[in-house]
Image 1 (cartoon, rainbow, N blue to C red):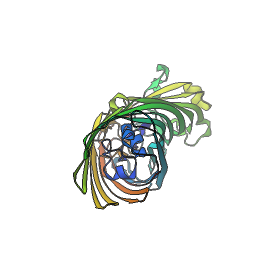
Image 2 (image 1 turned 180 degrees about the vertical axis):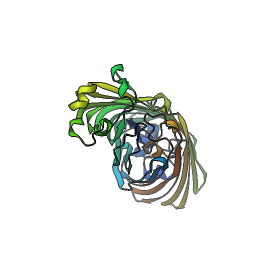
Image 3 (image 1 turned 45 degrees about the horizontal axis):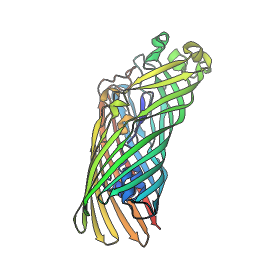
Length: 432
């Protein structure tokens, strides 16, 4: 559910992934009112830890494959999104503390909250000054990996409270023609709209907190609420490239450069509210609504470059580019249904919807990868002390059209993008 942006490109991520475990993914991500495993509790609602009966170890993984088409007819520019498969593992462990006045569980986890690798291949659309770098492989990667410690306390038979504190590792990479948007200091402003090839890589650490509550008035009905804090990650690394085409000398090594780079990513706070109801002996339903405060975090993105080399470094010196984003805060609606075929075998279906927070005025092929509608399905099997869950998620094809882009140089005005993503998840749980 998180996102990070660099230059004109925003890396779409976990906003598309429903839930943490394969079980929660198959239910459309509607898990804040259930969270009956260490992995889901540490990812969705730490209050779920208070209702766990014993010690449990969860291990799983998620795979994703994106497909897409880009087209700008007026520039004869079109291309495809690489469908290579990307994946990461995840895990969590909880331990029940004995001999305490109230039930208490503590847990540790390592969860990829956001991960996406996108490689577009198309002719670089010419800027308003007719600058183009020809056929390019536009690549973006993001990883947000959260390692956290959590605790859940069942303060009443019907009520559990929980909290977790996480260290968040953020890694970003961008390979693309870069257009300067809003340079500081003012002396560099005449270069706003200039275009250069850029390879930027940064990484860094931040931290965030999550609080949750879960209320179970009767055995077959429970409600959950969670809040995740806003957090900032100051990532550092390097940037290199060549601005030859901008100066009428494509490929000229005199216009190659290297910089120290800093990208300050601010990730949004989020509020989740939902419930789980076992309305028949074999049927259980879940529903959830999330509110993600994108506008409070993704208004502008500062990218700082310093200690530059070559002709570009000598001309611009140290500078900061403030990239307009203007994202909108949005609600995400989720629902899931589970049917117990046998005592140890369950089938699941889910659906989620959330409007794309990226306005058309700043949208490009990377931000178009944030999907609006998803459908999910899965199966769960319980054997002795183990449970195995599989899930599939399809982010339904989303078509975006940009009439007039607010990004300088006008590259993505009158362009069309279509993207869809397939997700697969597997989780194994062991109780002991």
